Amino acid sequence: MAQLAAERSEQPAAAAPATANPAPLGLCGFALTTFVLSCVNAGFIIPQGVGLTIVLGLAVFYGGLAQMLAGMWEFKAGNTFGAAAFTSYGAFWLSFAAIFIPGFGVLAAFTGKAAATNINTAIGIYLLGWTIFTALMTLGTLKSNVALISVFVVLTLTFLWLVIGFLGGGTFWIQLGGWFGIITALLAWYTALAGLLSSGRNAFTLPVWPVR
Image (cartoon, rainbow, N blue to C red):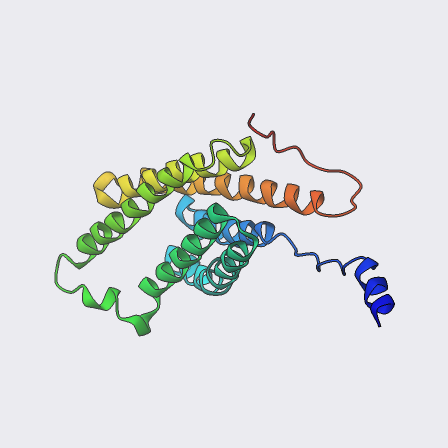
């Protein structure tokens, strides 16, 4: 028995199962939802009401649910920044969808002659909070890589232009926010693809330029 126990102790321990990197999923969910909404804001989809309706499904299931799942998996992987970012922006998309889904009654609560103005002001303040949050999260990327830093810097500007637009700046700023949102989505897709290509055997990889 002692010899058998010794032989077992000499056998290598079973390797822990590999855990996939959830960051590309989170980035892709964020990128696609941001791209579609930004196309609406930039004026690609007319009428705007129809374009906004198209975004809601993505906001709930891909930008919202899938991104929150990625955030939970980042918690398990020990990545505090990724967990906070993906969970927060997943919640952003879910809360954004809730504003425009009739069953939640958010827009219906605004009544009277000044309803449209009050709605824009409320959305502007809502986006201002996310602008501040994104600026703070940008500080957390400064020692990561240029690709990720670029996503958060341009996203901060996207939110800022939208805030100006909804708080009285007018259509120009909302459309500018739309264009910056499109750039944000493209940068997020690039960063996601770089993560996908580096996680397995692929014909090539994409640089992300780590900060040293």
